[in-house]
Length: 456
Image (cartoon, rainbow, N blue to C red; front, side, top):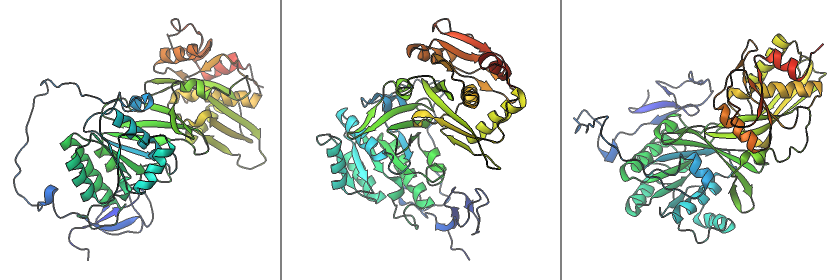
């Protein structure tokens, strides 16, 4: 019989179960359900019961509210992702693969905010203070006004923050923090939920900005229950390949700014260096036209970004040819291949297809459909598109091209980098102000006929 107060949580998705089972019904993971005892006291150590509360203070929706002040770090790419700077009392969760550079980024950010007068405290639960100082020395941050601590006890961390009252606290990482009021191991679902709740509550109560580092699972999601992402104000993902020098800081949730905004950094021997013009960086090695290479004019958050889409189509001797995708959705690639075969009579059966987004960037918007289709046809027919051409547009299952948002911003970014032609859906009205010649196409079949000619 289960102990009083005990619950069963899935360590993969955080779902709550009435009893133990070998397989989680919510996410389908096996052997992920563990028994954990919940806290028996409320905030401040008070026993949970039916005692009446003090009531809430209500305000009118029309009451004037002063604009939120923001502290800027001076790192423009970081400030952009945060929505214009760091908001007091905000709780931020930063996730990323091991070794991608999360600790390096946050140490540099803490040093920058320290120079802005926030008196940051950097709490490391994975490294000793001496190891953090070694990294700071390598990054040239020896004299930065950042105070260090190596601690994993939530009680000790909150007591120190209550007494010091910093403007910013960095917790690296939330998986190592444990609360002594919770009867479970550090890193468990209950511990993560309790630690994130207490730190977020402290941030709101004292007006201290708290940045928490979170590990990610093999699926690329922040480890622990999804409720942690709902608790905080901002969720950032630090993306990129460890063998590649580019890093992308992406906001997937932001209560104080636009979501899906990105900041681009380059990993160097002296730390992370911001990239002011990522479009020029992603296209730096594109010196001459090549088959299978197409420039896509995309939008990441509020920023227009030009990126090269590369495709390779080769005959295959396998019964099931390979379909390999890096930086794009594999399901959407299968859809584009099916539309090309059904609506344009361009077969890809018996051929291996490889698709890559240059620079380590991951594209999620459907406006890349037409550029992907152009790259696939270009690689299959070994026909290079003009070097001064950009492509964007969403492809429907009927083969029609659907309009995309912020077309004018895409074209202005392309004109700034020297492109003079664009292929876009027929509904796009922009283009005159940017000075780019636009070929407006109604459907994918018309695009294939007009750009590549007929197929036998």
